[in-house]
Length: 231
Length: 231
DNA sequence: CGTACGATTGAGGTCAATCAATCACAGTGG
DNA sequence: CCACTGTGATTGATTGACCTCAATCGTACG
Image 1 (cartoon, rainbow over the protein chains, first blue to last red):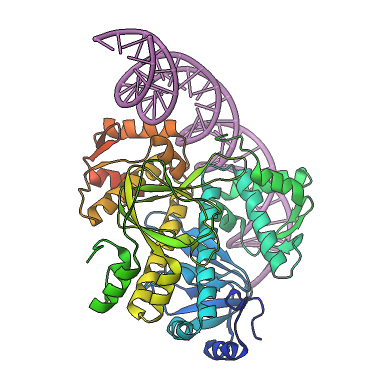
Image 2: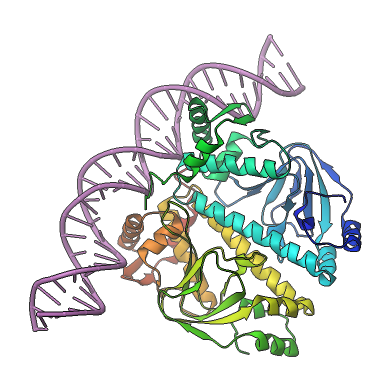
């Protein structure tokens, strides 16, 4: 099995279905840091499964600096938000050297036709994506910088854990500025908040290396019965 | 044709396909103001097409006041974010007397099997939903109250226009508090901002009746090359 | 070794949340 | 018909979180 971590393969595919599925996956393609995988407005043709490395999705809006809308880690699927559309919603750029597998969408759609299990899996991917966005929406709405950053780090931690990496020590492949854009803050605030978290002993950061010391406390900050807009 | 405004029917269905489609749509069901159409955590079984009236989706989070994540107008589909999941993501509550048609998902899935046009339409609905969320994400991220409210009103205006209602005069079926929650503000700010917009001659509000006078100016506010986090 | 870029740290200003009072309106009951 | 009550909306004053501007620092890379 080529892609043990790929959500599209999580459950239920028969052995021969798997073989058919593998057949339409193109062989891994390498990208260098800064290279674009998709460009905003270009025609949508394929999904991509991240094999290694990581990516950010950004959308450009008239009169504003680019906004980071997603980070993609290995095993995650890029392009789900373009299904059913003619063109790509945003730019997807490699944050470091990376490999991706291309998954031409028309092929996938054809395959889905005869494989209810795969269709279910595709739906599940789509809905997971939607719920992720909705959670993000809640996170950006009236949360303090502390809560946003704590949630972000715990989210990353969880994603690393679920793919077998340490949830306590990991590398931030994105810049402070990327994180800030993603969280709707400015980079100075990210920097300051990280410093404070470190000072409080919840974690330590050195450049882009992060170690979470007090997962518990971080969770408490994230959920904090907000100082802001208290119910 | 029963539902001219339903996005699932926008394009390309053959006549007999339409007939099959109608067959699985349950007859319209009435709801009174405040009644729940879906409840957070309950098993997901059906999509609903809003025939008349309007709804809000809210999600409850531990230690926080409910957060409004969506408003649904006639012709829109409720429950898309639950496809592929076992249970409902949020509560959906009627903002006024309303009618909905139930669309049992297993039936729809079966129907989609043999109808590529319908499947395409379903994908389009899903991706439209995702992009809406992403736009919302951008809106909540580092925009001023003015920009959020202006965008919100223009968005509503556009939705009314696209279903044949006046884009310049319409009724806000949601409370200031709902709007505030949706935009990540407090109700006082919504109230003040509306008052200021009115004072500047861009619109007039009286209770929940809204009239947009200067669509242009409102657009300028929404896109304003932000005073905040200027590029 | 010097340049560049990302990150940190500091000082000051501003927008929106908070707290609080008042108002408008609808429904209820005397 | 008119208090009474409750909910939603408005308006004001204050405060605090976060943005802005600016300087410095560190690390990577040519």
